[in-house]
Image 1 (tube, rainbow, N blue to C red):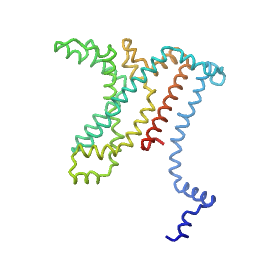
Image 2: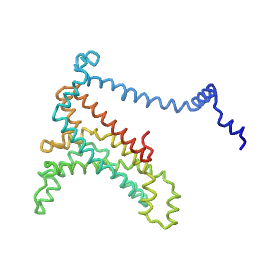
Image 3: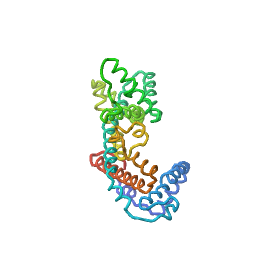
Image 4: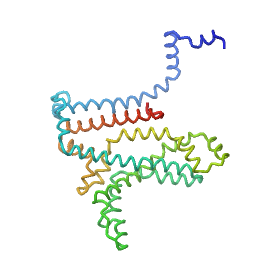
Length: 319
């Protein structure tokens, strides 16, 4: 290669030339930048501006004085929070339910996506996908009613069948371990089908020539799934796992609130229901905000930690 040519290719461009090229590139794609303005405005208004309210975690907040007029008390709300015995119970329950959900519910959409990917009859595949997606659109209030009608001790469909066969009824909703199984099973039923969408999209990105080459080598369906399909969606699985770990301290309000009852409160009382009772029912807004801030910080630690572990294992990670 001509050395003078190679030198000219690696020559550092002047700043003025770089700026001109950047400006030219910006004006060339200005429509795309304009399209980005709306989502950026949404995140600023609805995601970043409300963070201002987190300041009341460090205040003796008064609804009449507002954030600007309330007295600053440093970390007193956090000290009060950590001194409450109920705090450790709700943190334990939140971690327990989310960890079990992660172990049981996380592989479900992957398995479903792999099964759907193997289907060859197109109409059956579409019908199966539609049936699997539907539970995602049912609210937890309705699901709670269905669960009660199916698993209730008095008049529940399953217990009616069990007693008709001559066995004793099972306390699905009033005994802690049985309630936990119903809680996890309901979560899988509601979310697994919807979770397959991302994995099915990832499956479409796998090179078809790999399957054709493996068929020439005599590979069966199981071998192709193990050696081509799963490695093909591995980066997506890792990203989804990191995001799931980031929510390990976050739990929705509706599911435990609707499915819980006084007899299973040892498991059903979680951070979101605790914040509802403390923040809204008892009007201790600063304490509830401190709880939410603690929850967010733990989630951030999990996301950063799991992302670092994923990068060390050679995966792409979130950033």
